[in-house]
Amino acid sequence: MELKTKVHAEDGKQELTIEREFDLPVSLVFKAHTEPDLIEQWMGNKVLKFEAKNHGGWIYEIKNPDGIVVFRANGVLHDFVENERFTRTFEMENTGFAVQLEFFEFQKVSESKSKLKMHIIYKSVEQRDQVLKMPFIQGINMAHTKMEQLLKDKD
Image (tube, rainbow, N blue to C red; front, side, top):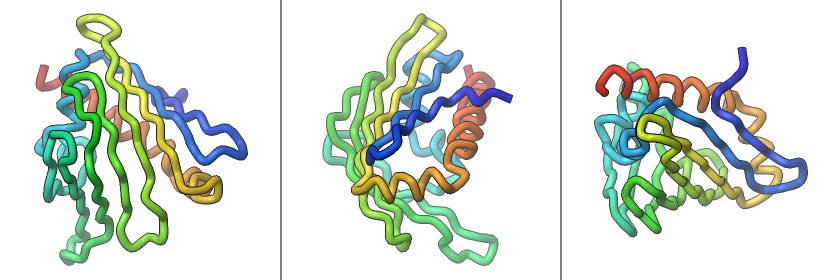
C-alpha cells in the first residue's frame, strides 16, 4: 500500500521534508496541530502545555499503564500565523537526540482540501539517519491517517 504522507530525505543532508494532502479544509488541519484536545486524540500524547502563540511553549507526554513516562517532548513555537504556518523547536527528553527545528506550512488547495509541508532540520546527518531507522515514516503516516479520519468524523 502506498503511503499518503511522503518523506523526502536526501543522502548526506541533515534535514528532511514531509508532505501530505488532506481531504480537509486548511483550518481543520491547522487546528489538529494547535488545539490540545485534538492533538491528544490523533497523536496519542497527553498535552501538558500548548501555548498557541509566538514564543509559546509546548510539552507532550506518554505514560505506560504503570504511570511511568515513556516519552516526553517539549519546545517553543515561533512565527505563529493561524492557518498558515508555525516554526517550533522539538526536544525529545532523555534520548540523547539534540534539539531539532521544524517548519510547518499549511496550504489551502481548495475549500475542502489542504496540504501540510514540514521541513525538519537536525543537528547532524547522523541524527537524521538515526530517526529514519526507527519506524518514523510508518508512524507519521498512521498518525496523519488517524487525524484525517478523526476530523472527517467531526466535520
